[in-house]
Image (cartoon, rainbow, N blue to C red; front, side, top):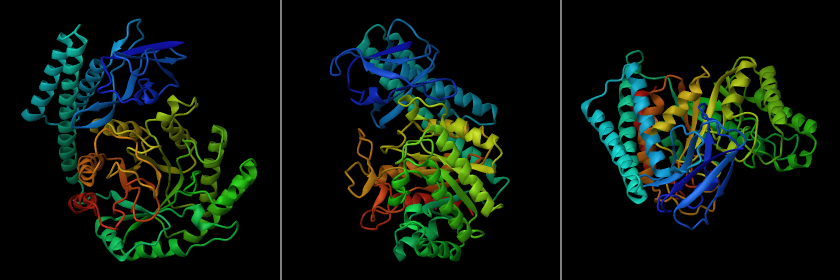
Length: 496
């Protein structure tokens, strides 16, 4: 069994739950299953912990880490080999941040990026800060302090690099298209919406993602209720919005009807009822949606326990059923936790990227892939440095298929009793302003990617019972948050 050990001088930058969420991944970015354990008492200093695996390959550690001005981020080291000595964690995280910036700027320069003096200076400052951390060895406290400074400088350089890349890449895209055809939309669930909310959506988005949730469509087996979704679809059509329908297959409590749990232990019957629902829904809306989201989140644990083989059979069966009833409308399959964080705690055969690749290679008719970035929720993906979102989207782009990003981020760290998914405890206060500022940096990075052909905000309002805590575009009083204007700005500047 392979083991990699780390130490940090104290808990100032290491959240208490960080060890539980730490993971090791290979060159492909896929986490290995690992056993994480303290080697000192959890409150002792220095902090000493180890990750054990069944293999002994070099790997990258990813772990939540507090950074002044950034809050808690999932940061990663560069590739590390197994050694008897423990690695200095803050120093290796600083090395990782700087390594990613330097590699990425070199890669983008080869693709035509022009690096101005200001960006070059930021990268040089980060490099010098890391050298200061190296020269502080063997004083652990001074090394940690200098490494923290190097991390902050590296993140500043990373943000500047992403901003410059986004600006230049978008300018290049506009040379071919005055207005980009990228879809910018919002998920519409089964709750009725106010006129003010609808008007804001019409001004902000060019796409509506209508869920057609099985739970709302078929509250009683065999009896289908379309009224709410019919009205949403008619409204989208009246506003000239493109329509994404689904996901049709999503095995969590937000989607499954209560009665289906009676058949939890009868897979064949379960699949039969699912296919009946898909058949009825597709027939009802055939020709009125532009894209079907056939299946979502089947790479994560749902409300019904299924094996990997059963999950795959359900996905393939759902695609076949949809295709029989609508042979022409493009369909996608979407995935949650695109970094595969859940693989570190659950030993599974396929990562989300590998599962997507298998479905595409099977030639089932999947023309695109959805990637969910539900940032800062439990369950959901951790907050990361800006460059890491770019790298992950590039990783998914290797599939060679259009990507649709489903995006959510919280506007508050307070408890939200109306939400099903709470906020992951942050170390800095989330706010409507911080939500808007984060999205203002992330959206242009996504729009700059040729294969990102859709960005869908995954939560509309906090006023009704909802999935993601404080994740809506409208607050609990129905007032639009600042993030709405950010999204509207990019629609006006870049999109049809």
